[in-house]
Image (tube, rainbow, N blue to C red; front, side):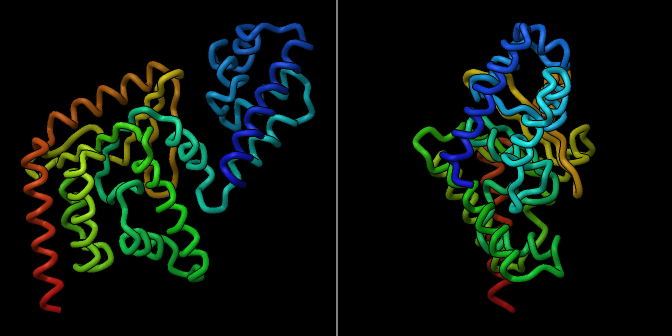
Length: 277
């Protein structure tokens, strides 16, 4: 489904939600109370600013007695075989974010990945899939990264654990190319990348990927991911805790200048290794 048509269906979702809500004689606040979100969120759904999670769509159907129409629409819009179910909404939110802050403890984040690195990661996670499947996943990942080239690109802050720099994903040559790509993004001021060194020790946010997204016209969200699942959170108190965790881990990272030096050093190590194999 093309981005334009997806947005058009989200707008239909919002228009239909408003019509059904008003027919039921409910205000945004009253509907929000019954489906456990704020009235402001209902307004954002109706304006297609924010997309409801599937469980919220189900509750809206129950309250408005709409025979599952909102659940079906929501499923159709998040049903993209290129992405895990729990990640599809995150992809939509990335396109709307004005700031993305991310911590990656083990793997280069998708928005920063090169084609060889993305391919190696995809094959490692899907060793029995066809080449066509791998190509589709890799293309989708590279397509996501185009938001960093847009004139309206988000501010992108990334904290990498030193693990990410040392693990030779795809082999030394692929890893050298990946780190060179990150260096270019830093020097082009497309992203601010800092590194948490091994000497930083333990940290509260090290159990999985953490991403924070902020928007011009909607509240922030947090997304956490482990190897087999992800969770998108928009509960203000939980998002605030995630923001605090990110602030604390960013304090534990090296300065941007020292981080760049470490990235350059790791890239050189991989280049030397590649030249001897």
